[in-house]
Image (cartoon, rainbow, N blue to C red):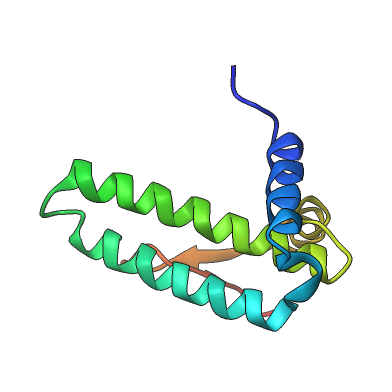
Length: 110
């Protein structure tokens, strides 16, 4: 059975503390690291059609790394991803819009 997100989040934070990332990094540095990981994700997804299985593994790794940087960055701001996700959901839950042919959701202006 897999661990809960909360348990994994705590493990990530302890890992970051053991490596002195927390408290010696800052939210901006973690955001920059997040962008690096997003770039790796985009590279993997762009190549996915060539060797789907290998690049799917690369994309999963990138998603995981992105979550690690987001967990650390949120903690450095004194919050956590669960609270951020709760807030984001409250903002989008009643949002209306449409899906473009590229698969992008565009919200209706209020």
